[in-house]
Structures are given as structure tokens and as C-alpha cells.
Image 1 (spheres, rainbow, N blue to C red):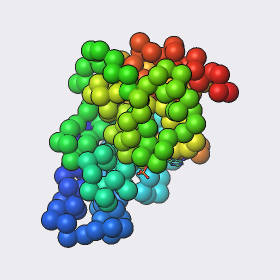
Image 2 (image 1 turned 90 degrees about the vertical axis):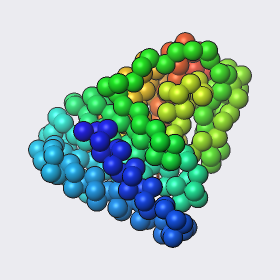
Image 3 (image 1 turned 60 degrees about the vertical axis):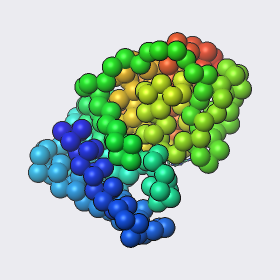
Image 4 (image 1 turned 90 degrees about the horizontal axis):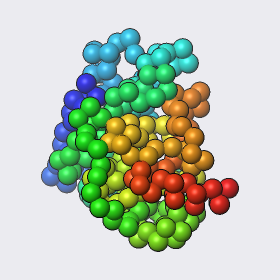
Length: 237
Ligand SMILES: Nc1ncnc2c1ncn2[C@@H]1O[C@H](COP(=O)(O)O)[C@@H](OP(=O)(O)O)[C@H]1O
Ligand SMILES: [Mg+2]
């Protein structure tokens, strides 16, 4: 269900960009709104008893008492989507007791779908690269890059950065300074299923469906370098 929803919303978003009929702010707003409307309708029809937390809509159901909560970002990387690049994503995760149990991330402009139930373990050689935000990255991400000697690669969208680790394009994605649960829940669900290290910057487990759905920092990286990355982060605190 998560994968079907991510794929369908991706089709809608490609349609919104089709032909360049909309531009600037209009294209991002239409994308957020239309993808949210369709996802909301699909979950309401297919999973009527589950609670939903989404970037673009009011909560559905009572999250505080629900064990099953969908955490959705209909369009992550709205700015990149509006500018016509391919680094934007649809995030769909089902959490059970605060942990992603099923997750899908679509990167529609690359015709890619990553799903936690079919993803293989990430292997192959390390690349010596780290994904950072197009908007510069945080002090913490630069500290990790400098300490481990990793080359920075700018990618928009949390989902697109996380899937770059899954694809083997980069070895790590370190985020600090603010994000919401919808920005990283489905990406973390897919990455964990792919055998990558996923934690808060202090090494603790990432727990979702908090009362305030703020998830300001996390690290996703190849398990081979997790010790080194966490040791580098430890010296920041
Ligand atoms: N400091 C911060 N506070 C809140 N959200 C942030 C943030 N930094 C990044 N984000 C959100 O994380 C997503 C990826 O950002 P980035 O590409 O810069 O890493 C974007 O989501 P949206 O596109 O869904 O708004 C962005 O809004
Ligand atoms: Mg987002």
C-alpha cells in the first residue's frame, strides 16, 4: 500500500509539472495540494482506521492513542520540484509504535521507487562522499565531512539524499538544525531495511509519532563507517 501510494502521488506530481504550464510558486503549491488530496483519499478509503500525520494536512485520527500511524510527505523538495530538477520525492511510511514498519520513497523524475519490503542490503565499495543540502548543510555535516575526509555532494530533498546512500552514490547523510517527522520517516524506514545505520546524532534510536512531530537531527550512513561518523559527532556535543 505504501509503495502504491508513493507511485500514484508521483504520477500526479509529474502531471503537475507536465508541459511547463505552471511555474514558480504555482507549481509547488499545486503539487503539494494535489498529491496530498489524492493520498488522503486513498488512505481514507483503504486504511480508514489508521491515524495519519502529513506535512500538508491536519492529523487524521488521534495520533496520541494510535499504535498505527502513517507519516506522509506528499512532496519533499518542493523547491527543487518547482525549479525542474529531479531531486524531489514522495515519502509514505506506516509506523507501528513509533517505528517505521513499512516505507516507500518514490523519486518520480528518475522513475525510481524504493520500498522497505523489497530493498536489498547496500554493499559495494565506499565512495568517500557525503550528501548535503543544496542550502549549504549544517555545521555537524561539515564536521563529519572534514573529519572523515568526505567530499560533499549537494542534493535537494531529504528523501533524495537518503536514497543516494541506498543507491551507493554517497556513504552518508547527516542532518542537524531542524526537520519534521514527515521529512525523514519513510527515508529512514527504507534505509534501515537496506541495512544502513540510522540514528539520532547522539547514536540513540529515532522514535516517530512524538506529540510535537519535530525530528531535528539524524544520521544515515553505511554501517562500515557508522563508528567513525558517531565518534566525529561526539566531539561536536
Ligand atoms: N532547519 C530546518 N527546519 C525545518 N525543516 C527543514 C530544515 N532543513 C530542511 N528542512 C526540510 O527538509 C527537507 C529537505 O531539505 P534540504 O533539501 O534542504 O535538506 C525540506 O522539506 P520540504 O521540501 O518538504 O519542505 C525542508 O523544508
Ligand atoms: Mg519534506
